Every structure is written in structure tokens, then in C-alpha cells.
Amino acid sequence: MWLEWLEPVLRFVGRGGLPLGLLAALALVMFTMVLHHYLFIQFGFRTFRHRLLERWSQAIARLDPRQRRKLRSGLLSKARVRIQGPLLMLKSVVALCPLLGLLGTVTGMIEVFEVIALLGTSDARAMASGVARATLPTMAGMVLAIMGLFFISRFESFARRQNRALADRMGGVQ
Image (cartoon, rainbow, N blue to C red; front, side):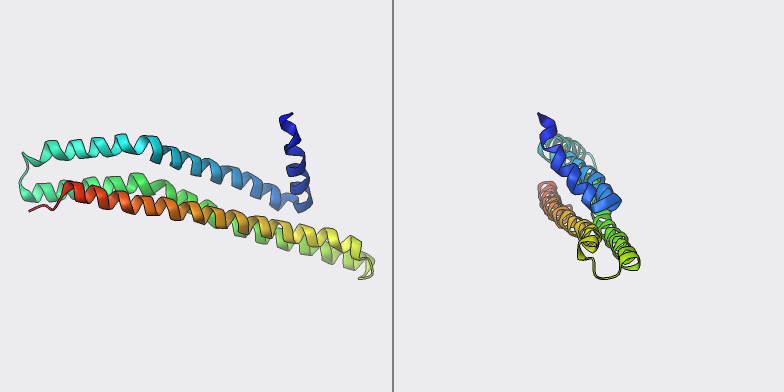
């Protein structure tokens, strides 16, 4: 029953060749990373933020202003790394998507040129397969990159808001 949705996907990947298969694997990696970061934001970040603020509130009474500034800066930096750190890998994966699409374009065009060399330009049907192999990975790579950029934008916006909120909660240090 669950294999019914898999057949059209495999057919689509088969039409695009190896680069489209690589893009499918990369999409799986990308969406796993997105889900992981989303789950951290929804469930893990509150606990992390609570521990950070608890550490701050316990320390401010016993530290002089210079030490408080250093601690505040260190805690805010730790929060920024914890929220934005996984985004660096996600950005790398997203950057690979159009490159793999371009690889598909090149391999598809090579197939078109091989058909032209063997059969000439009179067999449009034979060339269509190569054109499909050229355009499908390009389209898929661009779609994946756009989707990845959407998630990155949302996660970075969340990170900025949370860092600002943490800085406000910790207040100015004299």
C-alpha cells in the first residue's frame, strides 16, 4: 500500500538520471535537517533558554560589572551558536542543490549530443529523452534550493528574535 506513492517518484528519478537520484538523497538529508532544527526550536530551545537565564540570574548577584558583561556576552554567544550552528550545514546542503541540478543539465546535454552524433537532428523523439534528463534535475535542484532558502530564512529570523529577547531579559550591564 505504501509503495504506491513510491512508483511515480522512482519513475521521475529514473527520467532524470543519476543527478536526480543524488538530488533525491540530498532532499532527504535537507528535510531531515530541517525537521531536526524545527523540533529543537519547538521542544529543546525552551529548556536551553531557561538554563541560560537561570545561570545568568544566579551569577549576577555575585559578580562585578566587568565579569557580568563577560558572562552576558558569553551566554549570548552560546545561545547564538546553539540556534544558528546547525544552519551552516543546512546552508551547505542548500547550496549543493542547484549544483547537482547543473550536473544533470550537463549530463543530459551530453546525451542529446550523442543522439545527434548517432542519428542526426531528424529524430526529435530520441533527443527528447536527453532534453528531459537535462531539464528535470535543473528544475528539481532549483525547487529544492528555494525551499531550503525559505526554511533558512525562517530559522534565522527566529534566531535573531530569540537572541534579542535573551539580551533584553539579561538587561544592560553596568
